Image (tube, rainbow, N blue to C red; front, side):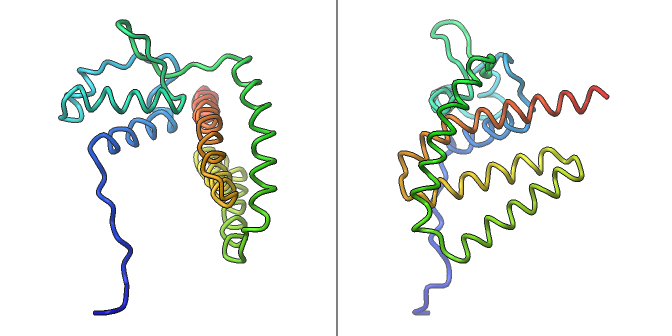
Length: 179
């Protein structure tokens, strides 16, 4: 077979699986702001050694999802009103830059993908499915960041914006669950 039919599958390390599982748990509200994280318990749950969990937590800290206090505790990040305001101010500036840089790179299929994501967001909003809304909103933003062609800008926005999405998703779930 000389035609390339499949893309190469990159191996995923255990640390990366732990990282993505924990990040998704935080984003989906299964872990709440301020919740303590105990490395030994996570290591047992994932059936791995504590060093792998520690590596994942270091990455989650870098991404803004957890706060680690050496020799004390690790907690899911709690955002104050001031934190949110500061993050939004920088987000507005960086996303405007991402859009500007993305413009020359956008192809017809990218526009279709962005339209589909917006359509899914609207559907989520109409049906009050906030998880659907936020997941598609974040996917739309990530697509724009990717189209900017600048991975440093995309990484900076990922670090700033994703914890905000997690925070708002958790807040809306709590509000929705209270009535």
